[in-house]
Length: 315
Image (cartoon, rainbow, N blue to C red):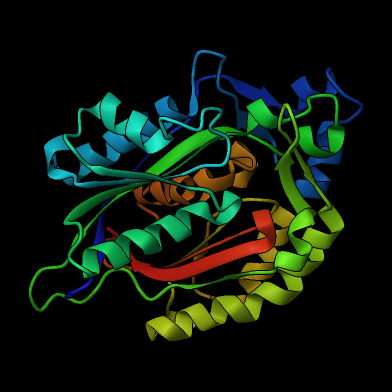
């Protein structure tokens, strides 16, 4: 019941990079048009032989190595994804098999763009309840596989990748490193962001999402800070879902995190859905832009018009 903390993080992106100039040769668009509307310059695209569970396993292996742990140390695997093609075995089980994790509880979490922060909260609750000791929490999506590459309103947005965190129980007397989650949804507006149909395709009502994110989410994000007992001015970093730079920058400003580093990985990675938050956090850690123990707000939002956020201590 001492709470949990993030012991380490890791990330992975496919080697292929798709630039705005590349997209301009595929659809009626331009580098200036894309940058001015969403702030994206490049994105990574997985090949046909790179399934979601492979992306997830690469990121998870890096997080395990950074934590100095082995697969045998893990007893829970949670994968946040909405782009796995197969229903069974689930992605978490396939990741566990790839890494050689013996007998873990293995579950997928589908809350689309808010999936990682939902999964992180679930791991925290599970560890607090004593049902797990160490968990791998992974956000992984292959958005390229659910994208209509003839639709310039959506194909310019997406990228593929994965990010992972090792979550473990805190020691006696140690302060929890994962704060209380604040989560919810707007079910009556779930049509605003969709991955549906056969074959499944990503679609969204961009203006509706923009208005909702920039007007409704700032007070919710501030409440997540309040639940953690952290004033936004004391945040070292803010890692929002990397959907659109025109959403990220106003939302970060309205939270009041005036001293925080704001993750802007969307510019080079695009919208990677559930992967975006752990991917951006892992890069901040790798680049030394945040230090161990720093308070960081993680806040996912989007698909289903769901949201979830918590303040964590940087590993």
